Length: 277
Ligand SMILES: C[S@@+](CC[C@H](N)C(=O)[O-])C[C@H]1O[C@@H](n2cnc3c(N)ncnc32)[C@H](O)[C@@H]1O
Image (cartoon, rainbow, N blue to C red; front, side):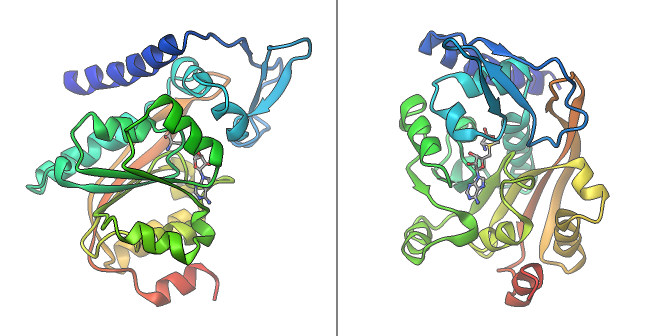
């Protein structure tokens, strides 16, 4: 418990230090109205930079990544996001319980953003970590703010991965897939995540988080986790409910972290089923 607290503090400190190094404090303002009627992906803030405040949606990732330190200030300092540290520490624990070491993993970090998950993995001495994100600004921000964290970084849409990039990714022989704060909403849909699972080795590890509501409803992610478990596609090693971050109204958003080990590649029929074929 104490170690975990220290690690969460260290993630917070590392984000603060990173922004401190950048030396910029942004004038972030939250709107007068509450966010209760808005979807999590519709929440927004105002950024006072010039004469007119700019309205920026939380999911306008490019606008956020383009400003060094803004992502850290918004999500990690103001909204207390804990997910990279929670997911990576639970992966480490599950591996250790299974007699394996995180340091030997070759990780594909899906929806890598500006590299906070990569940094948490790198801090634990990971063998390889390769990032993938749909937005060029995410790649540029990771290279700008966390140079050397990723051994390679692909700019690609996981829902439509071009063959040459799939082959190049394959050459990294990933043994583990991480996906933090990137499933659902307008980000990565369940069918694409299923296909991404097959980008790691047959006995590969999976560590991801998903909004608690998604598992409690008839959502594709509930179906996915059910299929993973009921159809013996994976061995579940850990599932835990935790606080991902605050909403702009100060409510803790609850997520699940899941760590599982594949039992082989996911069969084509499962992929087709989730693709609605
Ligand atoms: C909230 S950010 C999380 C970034 C990082 N994992 C973290 O925890 O800080 C979600 C990321 O998923 C990426 N993403 C969304 N849809 C994607 C897709 N279809 N393929 C690849 N990346 C995607 C976004 O560009 C964004 O950088």
